[in-house]
Length: 108
Image (cartoon, rainbow, N blue to C red; front, top):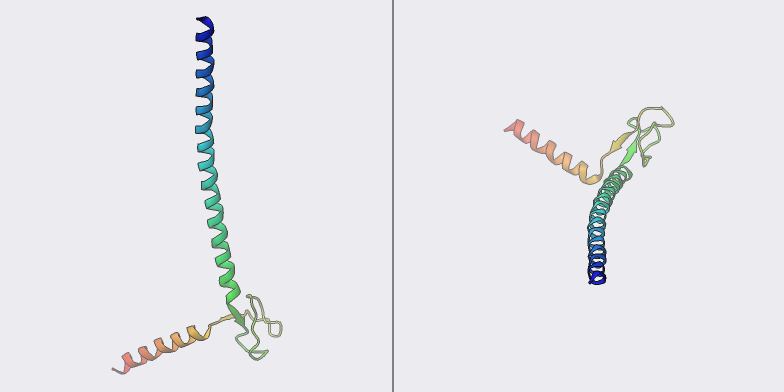
């Protein structure tokens, strides 16, 4: 009878130990998933910022070097003025369209 009670106690102890370990692993897994999600989100945001900068082109406002453009902000090597961001054709068309609407409103 003592052996049976001892065996049941040992088995119960092992079962409870394993069950409690699974909960700890589950909590750790959830924490890791949350941390990884945050890291991925930060990397995606950083990549998007880098792509926005990479897609922009910059040019000297004095056009010292003609229509030469640069891939990142800085200074003109000729006149040392800060390079200005050049709008793409789509942006230029949109700006012209908005200016046209403003002049029509002023005339009317």
